[in-house]
Length: 571
Image 1 (cartoon, rainbow, N blue to C red):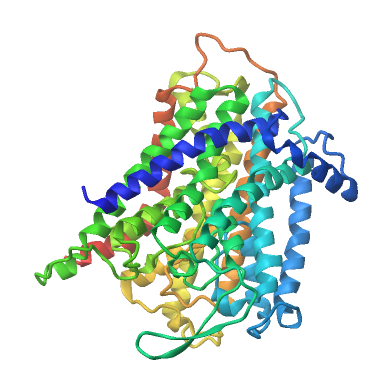
Image 2 (cartoon, helix red, strand yellow; image 1 turned 180 degrees about the vertical axis):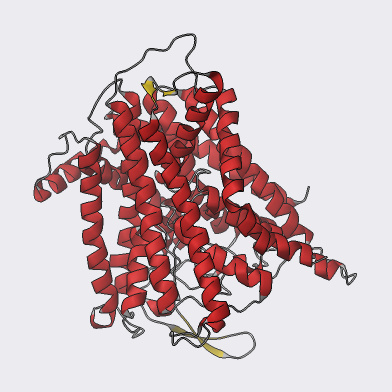
């Protein structure tokens, strides 16, 4: 085992050591217990008073969703207007132009839904104003929205029978003031002291070692990069994201950013156990997620450190692994770990180009996003996992001949139909829009888009199909990473991915909250010797089987046309 692989193991272990106490702290915050962050109480009370909000007012699941959807619609309008007119706004030292309406539509939706799919290059596509007051703002509020929705789910599970899921505004504000903002300050300081820029100056002129004179973009990037990782947002200040030496200067910052990607999603799993006083349930969920995460990491590290088989056939030694599209200062193993971490958590940032991953590794990260429940985005990861739990409960009940129950509440046809609809919808969005894009490339190259459809793909055949499949999978999973051989800044891709982004974000949030609202309103059934225990490792194995079977049935044919076919073609 070489030092690169040891480094990836240590990064994951440090993440777990930090996530456990953070999960305990998060549970205390939302339970109203005393914590060191209680000094924020006056600030929060002031915000609520200014906004005319009673943070103690109870909300049922419909009121909770109404509050969330209403404020998100307002943010969407604000973001679109700011992006279109950014050239007229201050803090634009490089003179960057405003975005086109279709690009602004895509960008505003993308950051609103915690996806951060970027059809522009960060340093040239945005100004400092929109980077800070649109992008960074949305990275905080979209992450806080996900956490608030998860706490609503916790409340519905915790009580025997209730209509009260808590107060959206209370959880939303505390998610920012007590969790996201303090952690972001810590990470930003670490990045700043390691060389990430914090200046408001424009581009700097430098002379390279080769004697070339070049302009280097900079800006107040450290704070935005901190929340992009901690909030599982992923949008890069610079076009190449955390592969950029100013966004991710060295191995220390790479480790810190990798930990930041995984930290809150894992901590929220532990927080479930503390909040509900059901640590075994949290441990079972964590075990299932981590089992698949470790397998995916192992596969990607193996293939990326092993090199390209096409080069092996030439008899050329590849001691550094498959280094195309990767940073020499980080190594193949660090990029392999990041590729799984960023797709397991709906983060989407990259420290190397996913388009350059070997075929199996590329297939793994696509599969990871198709599952979309291994840790997942902050809050929404557990909401997505809850859908698999409901299906597993239903199937288990059928197998043993009992009415399915979850946490003392009967799971009936209505809840199962909602869960099934979400899983079917994801498959429809990914495969349906990929088929549409493939049809456009094959049959309509003459159409007058901003970029001719035939020029969308910089790679032919199997890999070209993977590029299109990846784009819609990433949009549906609210991930944001991409196989960047795809030319996606045109009307077709901006509009179609924007539609997928909206549906892929809000329906998988609405459905679990609706399910938990319906379950929580039912009569509580005490546990008996015949009760199906959902906190057992047997049920965990059942949930794992459901995840594997549903994902395989839904997506294996599409994966066979792309990454798998490309892999076998190498031999």
